[in-house]
Structures are given as C-alpha cells and as structure tokens.
Amino acid sequence: MAGIYEDHPVAELPAPDGSRPPAGVIAVQLQALAANDDPFTDAGIKTAYNFASPSNRRATGPLERFVRMVSTAPYAAMVDHVSAERGTLRASADTAEQRVELTGPDGQQRSYVFGLSRQNDGSLEGCWLTDRVLVE
Image (cartoon, rainbow, N blue to C red; front, side):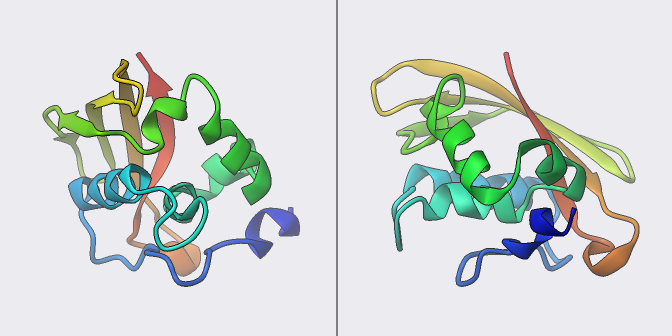
C-alpha cells in the first residue's frame, strides 16, 4: 500500500490544498489535461493523479499505470482536448458530480462524469478529490 502514496503528489504541479471547491478541482484538471505536456511530458495527467482520491489511486495507481490508463481509450480524448463543455455541478456537503463533454484533439466528442468527495481525515482532510471519472 505504501507504493500508492510514494509518487503522490507529483511535485511542481497543482495539488490539493483544501481551498478549491469541487468545480475548481474539476477545472484545474481539465486545464492541465488540455495542455498535457506543459510544463513537462504528461504533466496534465499527473495533475489529475494529484487530485485523485486515495481510493481512486488504490484502484488506478501507481502513477505509471494511471498515465497509461488515461493515455488510452476511452480516456484518451481527455488528453490535449480542444474544448470542454461543463454541465451543472450537483453537490451536497461531501459529494459532487459534474458531466463534462470534451472534444478530443481528433475532433471526436466524448462525455465523462466526474465524481468527487470531500476527504474527512488524514493530511487531505477538507480537500475535494476525484473518486471516479465515468465514461458516458
């Protein structure tokens, strides 16, 4: 289990700090993924990893595996997407969900639903993190 946390957070990239609301957490990930290789290779995907909840990282990590997963279908449209249309954010005290329609670099449109939760313990207490990104 320690291996899941050794590579988190990726240094020099946005990371959870408790100040971002759910919409801000989704926005920072979308902005990073739109310019995936800025400031270095796969920085966008690694930013998304920084905002993955511990349970998400247990299911999708370590980092190298997460990068491979996001780089391939059905998530590849997220990488270097050219536009993002965000639906209504539905939120409660501790969970949030938002549908996002992305146009990938190849022009293909794909819809995703981001599911987030507010962490309630440990060093990430109070931070909104992504539990899942479902493909519609």
